[in-house]
Image 1 (cartoon, rainbow, N blue to C red):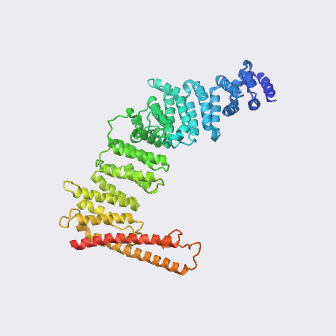
Image 2 (spheres, rainbow, N blue to C red):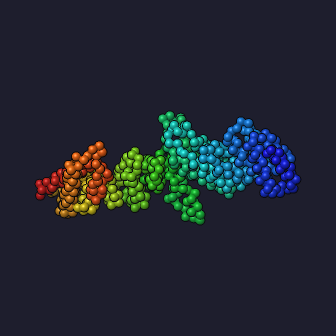
Length: 588
């Protein structure tokens, strides 16, 4: 039925002069052709399509049959497959390249979510053939094709483990490998034409650069890229990353210039377009590949100092640490660690802290350390935080500590900073270690930030326990280590202020908190005695308010444990406070 209808339509179209087919002709031909394909009449349709008398008809309207052809090819039906392949091949020869390009990209865009990889792998070679037919004016078409393909590739899940890469269930790795084959002739063309500097080559180079930048962002920024134990068996995505860097070099892009792009900031006509061409996340991935995995190191001169490399990498580190995805946070931490490792200890000058990124990176690192739900990233964040402290010189450490005490707003981080301050003081007090920034007049402003309660006597002692314990340990250390007659740190001169501004308010806070906890503890125990006879299978549930916050619903036994733990903490704080008071009394 469909075949006979198609023959009638063909006969009518043959009579049309100058190939001036109407919209009805298009619709009828496509409808009949689709029906023939779906009904398994591929062999007869192939004969009709290849008939010399029908070439004009299918040259103009044949590309509309791409949809049903692609669907049959994806289903891989044995009877229809060879005929549909032959029809597609013939269409590629006779139809308009521009119309074919539109039709093929429509098929890529409309691919079923479960058939994205198969659709891309099927159509890459036809797309390449069509684009090569466009001659010297194909740059924009190549760009459109690459953008469409990468948009679909970005929808594929990225393998997380080496085993998932090898299984390649969703086809991402196969698509990446096929894309490299797809762009090869265009890369070769740009590579050959670098010396001529023709406008067409510049346009094609720009499209290939965009392709590389998009690949660096997705999927490579989300991939693990860990090298296997056997270096001869590199992972597919790692190989893809190496090849993308190779493409950049072959089309004449300088790796150093790419990485320095945000520092150079070419303020010329079109610089906004330049910024769009070099996305910072893509360049962050490029820096990660270069400095963490040592890819394309032969393209990066060794003349740049470690401090200069750190400076331009801070923009990329900051970009990665602001994200929430585990893979990007991991890359940011790895890049920061590797970049810092190359820098000598105690060498970074205080002037670097005036740069925006040297302020924002520690702030984002603190968020990773305190808020990230992934344990190993929090641990890694703390390790990198300490490494960054070790690289600053004494003046820079002093300024960094002041900044963190004012801005971190986290007792654990503040406690860690105070512990570092104590270590610097201890180092400076040893014979032969000149350390003017952690003794005397320079140290006192830092101590005033350390030895204070955030909210005075009403400070939540449990919430601020880490900071308070480290502050008391530092004060006790200073009073024991620095003799009153030497007073190298200035602590004895400042002691009366510390007593009035820190120790006395802390004593008041301790008494208030202990009294509140003891009252709540007594209340729960009295309630237990009253309800002991009523308690049966299900234990009672109650609520307790501690330091203006209601604790979650817990059994009385759990509430007792929390309150007793809090009282134990207060005893611990008081024991150190009492010892400090004894030291002061002994030395007075």
